Length: 136
Image (cartoon, rainbow, N blue to C red; front, top):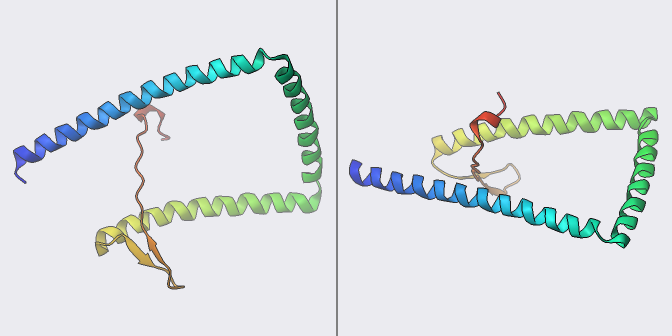
């Protein structure tokens, strides 16, 4: 592919991406509007409002009970262990993502066989994030 053809393809790809961004933003705005209308319809129904209030009270009682149970020393240790393991898994997942990207680059393949003989496919997921909202 020559530079002119490559540039044309790149410009078309960029235009397609921008078009999709516009459609996604438009659909998100429409979805928000429709959800608000649906919520309004629900809140205008007396039966739903009554049941919703009952559910909120039950949720408060449940949350209070859960809090009391989690304050017990043995359960506090479990909570700490769950948080610790969750954090460790998150860190390992971030690290393996970098390792897999490098493995794909170096090996030229998007598959890897684990120690137990299972073949796994390396999948790259890209997403678009507004620059100002990215964590620093």
